[in-house]
Structure formats: structure tokens, C-alpha cells
Image 1 (cartoon, one colour):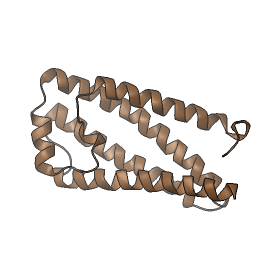
Image 2 (cartoon, rainbow, N blue to C red):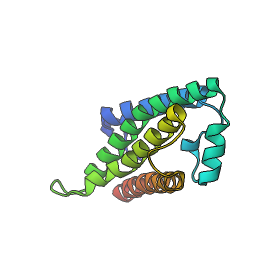
Image 3 (cartoon, rainbow, N blue to C red):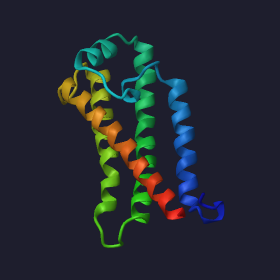
Length: 153
């Protein structure tokens, strides 16, 4: 394991912020939010969003606002991990922002639907973006974890 005295304070701050923000989002948001699902169909998304009460929409919008902070935190955490394991001149580290960009598109689209009743992109595309987002987040963290394990050997 990496020793605590070697962990960058920025990493500790980002992880703490991720946990706290995620907990607040879970407590305030409606159950089974679209953002938290690995995959959903366009029909499921439309039925879910249209089925929310006015109060649930308000809480969902508040949670989506917090999602901007969450995506900023995990994007920077991924960036720090990718930067640690890539050459200083490598552009590889910028791939860490890919999941955050997809999350931004998803969040803006859901907020648009909650406010205006429609999204800027097709709901089918939104479900694909969400699936790619989750896969890229998981693969990114697995990459960092794998590299940390190999570093200790």
C-alpha cells in the first residue's frame, strides 16, 4: 500500500469532497436518478423524467447542480492519477477529463429536460453517453489502481 505520508494532500481533499458531495446527492435526490444508472433506454429516461413530481424535479435539479462539483472533483482526481503515471510531455493525462465531459453533457441534458421538457440531444444518445461515461470512469480508476499495485511490486 502507498504510505499515508506519501499521499498528496490534493488527493485526500478530492476524495473527501467526492464522498461528501456524493452523500449529499444521494440524500437529496430522488431515488434511482438517471445519472447513477449504468444504462437506461430513451423510453425509460423519458418515463422517469416525466413521472417526477414538481418537488422531485426541484430536488433533482439541486442534485444536478451538485453533480457539476462532483464531476470536477473526480476529473481532477483522475487527472492527477493519469499525470502521475504518464510522461511529463505526454498528452495521455488529458484523457482523464473524458468521463467528466460526458457527465457534463448528460447533466446539462437532464437539467434541460427538467426545466424545459426536452433535451438538446436525443434521449437515445443520452443513454449511450451515460453508458460510455460509466465505462470510462470505471476503466480509468481500474487503470490507476492497477498502476498503483504494479508500483508497489
